[in-house]
Image 1: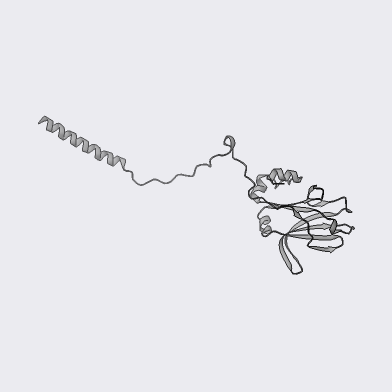
Image 2: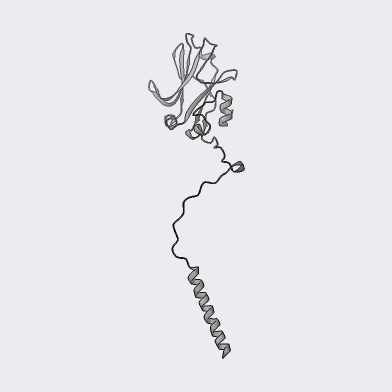
Length: 191
């Protein structure tokens, strides 16, 4: 009889253990989700990496072909770039470079001591000329008293558009590159 009592006690204790385990193991409603933790670090030695130049837009070198020669001293070339106004109005910047026939590259605006002190400069915006309208750049050469011989001009231009986030990341908001080489290095441009 003692064996039956021991067996009955064991069954009761075992059953109570299972019920207790089920009661404690089941959870009620989940609590509220906690606040988002801080962003993790990446890059070398746990430091944030610098943003790349994926959003920088740089044209190829564009040979100068005058759209219109207004006077013997003044001519311009239209370079269409759709959306440039919005790009700049959102904090981006536009730069342009001139490459001479002997591969010297200068930032614009630029005044040459040769050819009677010709000036080269650009503007961006929405332009019209006769029946033609375009949004983009207007690259201009002005002769300052010297006639422009269009056939002798063997130059090219290249524009670079830098988005607002890179303007601030690379310090361009405070200091523009002083040379083409500095811009190439800073913005990781292909020559």
